[in-house]
Length: 371
Image (cartoon, rainbow, N blue to C red; front, side, top):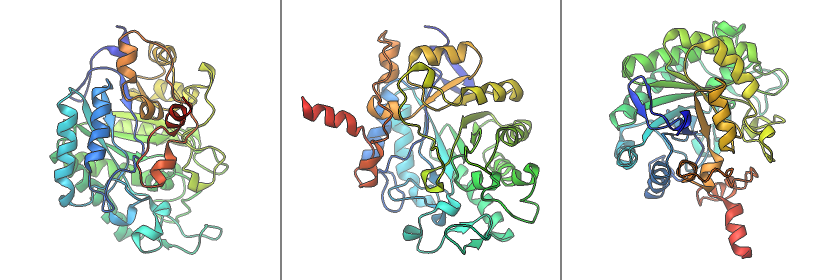
């Protein structure tokens, strides 16, 4: 079946193929972040659809780090029962699942958390301003929160964890000069700006042990003037690799709340040449890291995915939006139907999510209504 469908092992986690469902906000948890039956059904459909690994949407590790409504949480033990049900549903279909852990920092929802969000740096020009800058004591709380979240994930049966340090969320904010103007050991050059990500990784690793997969999702660039650039991102990735990171998922750009010209979910992907829009950056990372690389960003065609792996650009193919419309896409490709994904890359899937209905392919629904 080729390299895309071969079994691989990632720090003891056996994956049935090289296809990964990359994290996306589903908008299907309760107001307090608990797993719902609808969310389990969605994740179960992905597991049955053929992917080798599912990465959950970003689960907030502290209540004040919640980004938006109906987001999954992992901040307290009371959430464990639903998380166990989720992992059991995935494992029943010979699939593996990793929890993505996050804190939104500056982009936490003030309406939801009931207070102004805490920020990496409070400086003139920060919008909205003023904000309360995170103290050293809070940074210690933050590190411990990620570690305890990882313990909960492991206890709930997740096969690994992923630390979210991309897209302008909190750990990404520490890395980016756009947000990090601190004057202490967490600000300044990239070695200092990467300190928090490394400290979080170390704490998570200590909490789960050496034989449990720990991944990081990282921006290759922020794609906004004054933001994180490739060389600093690569420096950070090298630091994490030396610390023993099991794999890196490479993405890029900032959440729409940050006001950049690009977001992580690019629209208008119509040709193979437009796919895998971080592939040039991925080549540089793969060449310099020596650990497995997951690549996400606009991959829609089997041939493109196959070439990325054959050429050594990436070890695993991460996709998100195509699997919203076609959760069984990987089985379709495996069974010989190699037509490109039906996803139109229009981002309309997020509209019902923002309305409280959970994300789904609105374009497909409208197409059905026309027939």
